[in-house]
Picture 1 (cartoon, helix red, strand yellow):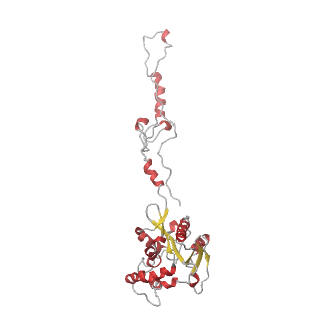
Picture 2 (cartoon, one colour):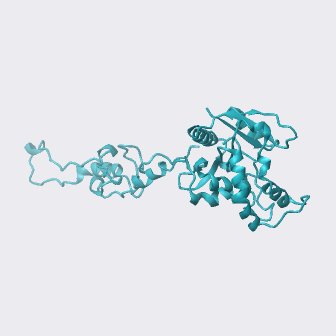
Picture 3 (cartoon, helix red, strand yellow):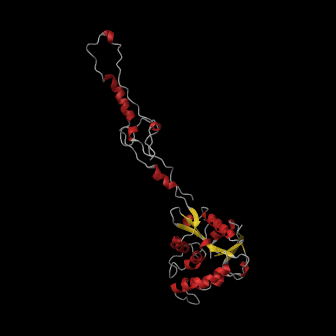
Length: 312
């Protein structure tokens, strides 16, 4: 059973430093009075800074008094910027230095989501993603005896038995927030599910009521019947898949990327066709699959909707 919403770009603002005032501005700055204002005051008082000499004669009245020039405030462009991204205190005089490490900020822009192969450390995230999208794309937590149950049917058997066909969307910090997984050979997978996986499921959960009386019984009934995956109409489409992304990661193009990775893996394995089953009321997922080139394959007496496509 597959559920997927239409599957962002994240980033920080451009690394840089904080500067009060425009380059060359003479107004007040953060942390103190602007030197431009101070310089104007000094210039205004310069005329009276040197008292007249009583001994000066009328012939000496044209004598030029040479004053020590006042250095202007260097513009932002003139200030030296060290490699670590901080202003050099020497170049700005007594002004308060604003330390902003560009190297640390630049790391934020390096955090980018990526699609990668599944790793065993992703197991808990796979369980979480599966149950949070199991109710026709919605959250199914708290609806069964154990929130791991749905994952033990529709996700974890695949990453356990065929991890080579499992891919995750990594949020850029090592956390899986979406996945695509499946099998290249459905009949072979069904055999392994019954022989290798089902015995583990039986040790984890009680036998279901028949007929089912709650959601736990419904899911366990599916787990105990792996042969339900053998749909005669799908014989020419031997591979099948499940794809899910957490809601906040949907609609951003990541689902398409996951699907492309999965189909490329099938092509490398020599598989040319694939199918999937989905809940009929998951309309968002249907729109997503239509955009990816999946078409409906009629299946007699099927509660689910089956879609197929070539891997090329």
